[in-house]
Image (cartoon, rainbow over the protein chains, first blue to last red):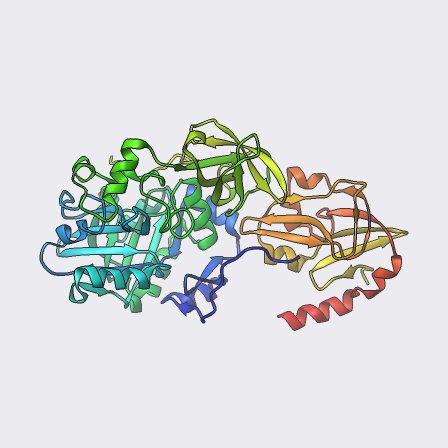
Length: 375
Length: 125
């Protein structure tokens, strides 16, 4: 047995505030974007994935960067860096958007939260240092505050609202993509109704020193089990959500990535963010390639990096995320293909270990998302 | 005494006459995690010692299985196609991968016996 692909970092990975808890829970720790995080616990990725879709799972997402934006009119300042409509973002709401580069490529995908007392960002672990440097340079160092001493927990699954409302009753009626402050198990928490699994759920920001206490209180609920990075990845892939550094990077444009829905009509028309000219041109003329969902025939998973070929054998793209979808009960993948092959039901081939598998372009997500839509 | 032979890559062999049954050990399946697909060679194919014999896909990643000894594939475990999780549940039994006719039975002598493999696992722990 020789292990295949798997990212490692040369430096010693940093522990999150839940490091000891992961060990107690039997987490198999791996380095991920500079942090030591559990890839899975004892029951394994399939069980954790299914539990998340059936009940609720608790994920340690403390590797994500939590950043406050200070100063005058953060919305207007941030709109110079992201295509999302922040001027129209009401207090208590959050929005998924992108830090773009001048080529309309993506520096990072992030959440922007308009809290009652300010604006904050949740950025990815991998590009965190680069993001902070860029934000500091563009907005001014004094406007950017990296909240190093905070942890984040994600409680995800159809039972998440029932569980969290036992700690703070109002959580149950929070709209999808809203934010509020609650005491959770006696800890002042900043809660958003959001996540990365396609299920209803919450992301809970707490002081690092209190994270283990809050995690233990949530894990004490009968519906809740811990889940690791493995399930997080298979859940988000089935939900059609992008993983930065894989499905999105500096070279994938907003239009190619199919993320034009993150722009309001005003922002499409006005531009004013890096790469807006390219986005407008690609909207008018069509992008060269598009992000698509792919399902290969048979049972063999296809992985990131695999070539996608036309039926005549010509290379037309590549896989950016791929694996086994536990809820789909079969292989699922995302990748980029030339636009003329991006239509749903187009037959393509995926090169796997020297053989080509027949595959089909499919609509994303692979599993219907179940975000909270109100009572 | 199980009579099994082992490799440092955590494959096991059971030799009966000139045919070796090959699979992966409990340690290997534990390390791999949930197995979702096993790609097996065509019967009749000849593999050399150290050559790629199969591929195991867990939820996490693909891992190659190299032939611990050379020979001709005479049978593969068709059950794994429908239910690859058998490898997790019963790696040394129902979760076997393939049988091959040994090209050189002497190649088995270089492999670890049960006691040596248990010692090897202790070193890894």
